[in-house]
Length: 150
Image (cartoon, rainbow, N blue to C red):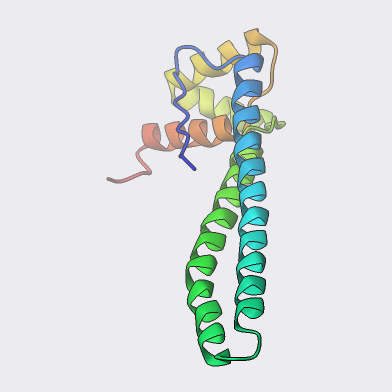
């Protein structure tokens, strides 16, 4: 799994098509993580059955130890895949369109010229703001006001 970074230019907001493409990439990433998680589970099951059938009652302690030793990397891999799946779901949710309170929009526009230009560009494109864009505008407004300290 690789991390996807989204860079938003304040001069030109992404179009509906570009947002749909990014959403599809995140969705595919989440689906791939789900498939890999089930594949990992299947692999662990096959490995466990192979050890059980191989030992067939003799040397049971070795079989149990082998399964226990495989459980550790399995747990790490499963946690990694589950985190990747949840991260992809969060990223898709960040691209959801949302209704923004007009008062918040006017606050963003009053505090920052870049925010004003960005919001006007989005309006001209005929789409709503995404959750990710609203978070970005909120941070811009805070930076302009001096609420954020480095």
